[in-house]
Image (cartoon, rainbow, N blue to C red):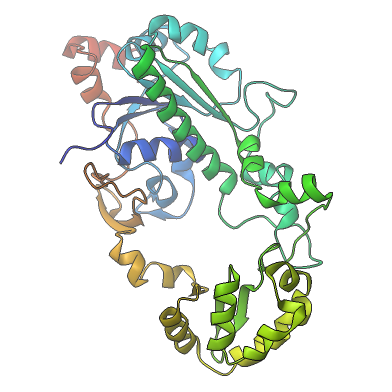
Length: 395
């Protein structure tokens, strides 16, 4: 079955997380992604633990469905070969610190002269403009600077980093969106463009109600634990044998919820008549809800709440997530066979397309695994030309 991005050729210069996540999405949906790496060392993530038979599981989780080619861009011949590739691809993605490609003589202004249809996507810590542009950044830095840490954690606690690297992940997602948008524009005009995505920008973009609460009411949000700042009850409760997250998002659900936990008298309490009042009086409401929820096991509450339509869910640990029936049914844990690591499990593809579905076709590549294949089949180089390049240390 054809895939949505089949025929799209992507040159991937990215490393570690934000960029590789973006190009993995494109690869999962059918794009031919050539991962260009430095000889010998390759992507820094190849050295990140944990390792399976010497291969990084971290790297494998972000680079499936790609081909790896090594190339030394610090050599004249390497740059010439790179430009030859640029003339044949649709998209280039890089996540170097701004200025790096320009120092190599391979910045956007140079490359778009080689290929006017080229989409040049750059994901960086702070973007290609602004006073912080040339600063280095990692996920923890932008989580700290972007405000997400200031609203994460327990009441009265210290600012807390979100457990997943959302500084990188959101930048990767926005980079993919930018690439697809630029491709749609190219369909109309025939011209490529530069896509500039900042990790810090991406963090600000996902602050949603925190920004709204500050700009509308002058309130500076602080950590409030696991409850929602604007909807109540929207938080976890202890049960007889564990915890259960409950989300009561409107008055209809509130009425149903009170009936389900046999606390109908709360419906007549003026303190809790509306969501705004329930949120304002959350500290008074919580113990009135917590007591009945302790009377049943989590599974019992889940069955009851599912029956009457109350949104709920257990707080799963990772080992529970990977065997959750819904996760399994949606093929969100897939097994791939790596040539060195053997069979490994990876997160699946969350975008489900009915006519052109994505697929995990192959494991992450070994360093330089496809160099000769790409030089021969994509660039049309002869065996002698390839041998000469190898002899001069170009790959």
